[in-house]
Amino acid sequence: MARNPSPKVAEARRLAKVWGQKQVIIIMIDDDTLSYVSYGADKKLCADARRLADIAYEAIMLGYREDKH
Image 1 (cartoon, one colour):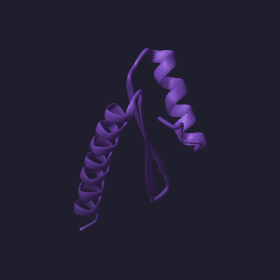
Image 2: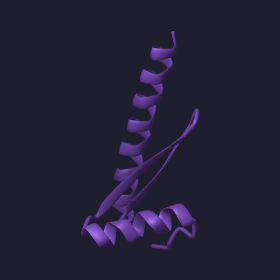
Image 3: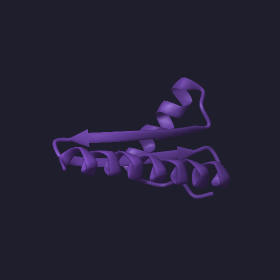
Image 4: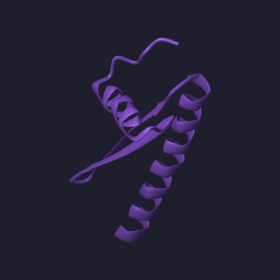
């Protein structure tokens, strides 16, 4: 599997090694901007982490939109 060259993915990969984890999701918040990065140790784990990160992102955004109304 090719490594993703993104600096954010590199940081998630580093944290996975530091904490001894096979998957990492980082959610980043800056003012009204929400973003995330996910990492998995292999192709399947990477896809699983991405799916979970997508779900978490959508849940946060849904809650945020509901709070604004």
